Amino acid sequence: MDTSQLLKGVLDLAVVRVLLDGDSYGYEIVTRLREAGHESVGEASVYGTLRRLHNDGFVDSYMRPSDSGPHRKYYKLTTAGKRRLRDDAKTWRHFVETMAFLLKEEI
Amino acid sequence: MDTSQLLKGVLDLAVVRVLLDGDSYGYEIVTRLREAGHESVGEASVYGTLRRLHNDGFVDSYMRPSDSGPHRKYYKLTTAGKRRLRDDAKTWRHFVETMAFLLKEEI
DNA sequence: CGCACTACCACGCTATGCGTAGTAGTGGAC
DNA sequence: GTCCACTACTACGCATAGCGTGGTAGTGCG
Figure 1 (cartoon, chains in turn red, orange, cyan, purple):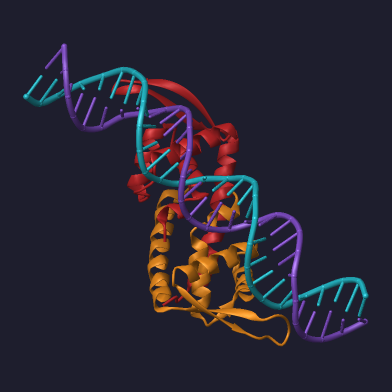
Figure 2 (cartoon, rainbow over the protein chains, first blue to last red):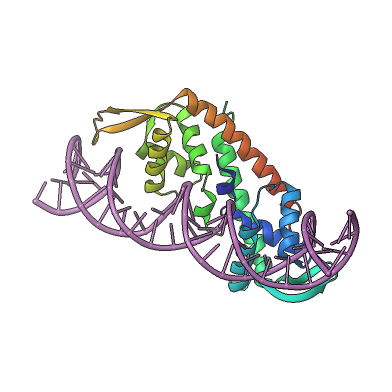
């Protein structure tokens, strides 16, 4: 099983959830996701996801200088983004339950 | 969240799990998956998955006449397919745990 | 005959994660 | 003062795999 395929559709949810803890920027979000267990998530995937979330109005963004590198582009959840989080989390849990039902005693 | 994206990578696992219960054919597998909760899974997705699983040696196939319609193409798990099921189920569970950790108290 | 259900296949589209490469800023080692 | 590591973002193009659509048949019923 190609782990990267499993992220399809769920990466949005994961990124939005990270932003619920507070505004953040691409590089930090990647780090957080990897620490949480999504060890092989690609940077390009996260930056692409952020761009899409921004285009769709689920996050706002603003620049902020850093004292240890280039400027950071912070992202902030919008109201629509928070609703999106709740909806997606619900969809995800239903999906997981369906799979659990299918897989029960799979060996 | 587009539910169909969630199936990416997991449909293989779901189909293989159905086949552990006994040889089956595309049309029936679609029905079973829908009954289990994957209500909007497309036929083309399942037939495509079966073709891939067959090409990769995870299932064998054989034709069998039906008394209520056209011939059926049955699929049967190979040894490699059963191993694949165990491996994929493990990967899936790890992935689900990672998401659960991320999502905990998401509201 | 027409229709519904069963059963399969092929074609092309689309979404999205990833690899790779490029551009910059800071700061420490040498 | 040069190199390197780490930070931080962006752009380009690829690969995977699920889906929509439509086509071909077989059975059986009204």
